[in-house]
Image (cartoon, rainbow, N blue to C red):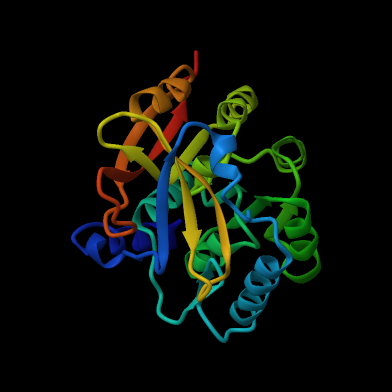
Amino acid sequence: MNKIKKWIKLFLPPIILTFRRKIRDVIWIGDFINWEAAQKQCKGYNQKHILEKVCNALIKVKNGDALYERDSFLFYKQDYEFPLLTTLYHLAYWKKGIINIADFGGSLGSTYYQNLSVLKNFTKVTWTVIEQEHFVECGKMNFENEQLHFVNTLKECKHSYNPDLLILSSVLQYIEDYQVLIENILIMNFEYIFIDRTPFSQNSIERITVQKVSPTIYEASYPCRFFNEKEFLKKFTKKYEIIYIHQNKGYVDIEGVDYKGFLLKIIKN
């Protein structure tokens, strides 16, 4: 715990401004009447070449040739996400250095590897990624270890590891039936939920668009939703209180859209 207290001091403002990362070569187009209409204009994320690029990049991270990756793009200089660090240390403090995390849509462990140097300061870490079947198979084969695990469903994660914290980072906007997912999450009673890098319309009008990734990263396109923040939070605040709200400034620059995140804690009767 002494290590944790020392690290907390390192990650307090004013150095928050140094923890920024910008998306490269990604554009959003259109304003579609529904998800199905947007889907018809997309190639999707479930493509073999995407998994191969991400896997090859993370193998380099695992071997120490890069510090971390995001969307197959390699980073050689450490760049932490301050809101997530705050959440991890908040959790570690209350759990006496033992943190148990579920990372929904966590690829092959991108966020785990990005924060690995920090996780080493905790007493015990369990980090479980919930992903598509082909990502889970690749993760188990190439990256699973004593700390990092891969499963196909939230139900399996909850049953096998009973995590204290659920991470939803840059994921809800890409799910057609996100309301059903949220209802399932609420049933599972995670103690903490950390939402990050999620887009909200400044005029409060929900919008469905198509996000296109440059072939310089990998060729892909998929529907993306810009949420109404008030309606979005209403679903969670039935059972959770908002501990803090943060903005992902510098992450994406889209006119009329704010990328935000929240730390939520379950309300105990």
